[in-house]
Length: 408
Image 1 (tube, rainbow, N blue to C red):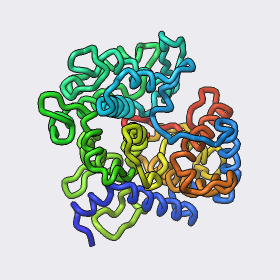
Image 2: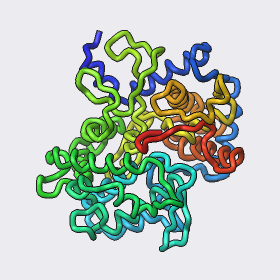
Image 3: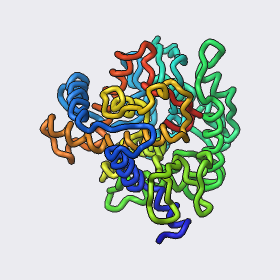
Image 4: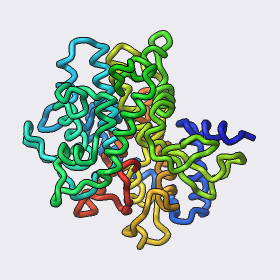
């Protein structure tokens, strides 16, 4: 039996997310969950829709990985690629890409249905993930995260001093344009700055530590130019773990995006706990391309899991794979630590693993050619968004979640 510290460390892995989410699905199929029932006979229809969306979005089936970089496109321009193309040195380009991806992902929790961002340079009006991405890129480009206030980079000292007002200005927040979780986002970035400053061996020298220093750290750990995606996640969880609100700790170790559910049994000190590490995994997916652009081969991408957020989760609710036992709870103030939301997230991760082979079968593609990261991008996320737009006037999720700006 694992002691508490070892049990805690076992939860800081993608395999723990996958294994415990699979247990959640087993409980759902057996009719034992408190909030949801599961109808696996509806999964083939969901797979059909995902394939329809993939063929519409990517007729050639050439699909990039699900990553933050997809959201930097506005007004027909790839703003992320444009920004990085200005940097000649490959190593500095990699550090800058890490700076941007890390800061932008940490600002990427649900924005709420009312918030919009107007990008003056392209004329685009954006919301949700795309709006958050472009707003964060514009702040980055203008030097808002840099110590000198002008360079496109992120510095630990500046991040540690960021306030909610700074984020509000950059994100055009006001009484008529509210952004959910503003304080939580600013606090995350401030803790990111503190964590980078406290670990110069990972994030660069004591004179100028930055999130982008993780690029050099990961590149140095590659063997024969190869780096497994799970190693990226391990580094993110190990070195950025201190930034997450400490909701759950075990053996003195903060577990981040990990939650209680009494039916998840493990037979050790981690009984009743289920991890998701959603933003950490989203970040890990988003760090793959900068590493590959620097000449490294990122392997075992399917070692990461699907992301338990409301587009993927909404797909399964809207398609009838998941049904609330009490329909009135869809409009309740469901907090992220509630049994309903924990069940929804665990079921989403497991159902993404279940739908992926059905999608591949319909497309005639093998897993090695069409990993989960492509199923998500192609894919389940877009299908969930499409259903949300068709079924609800505000395009919101089928179940209301009260977000603090750090999860879901």
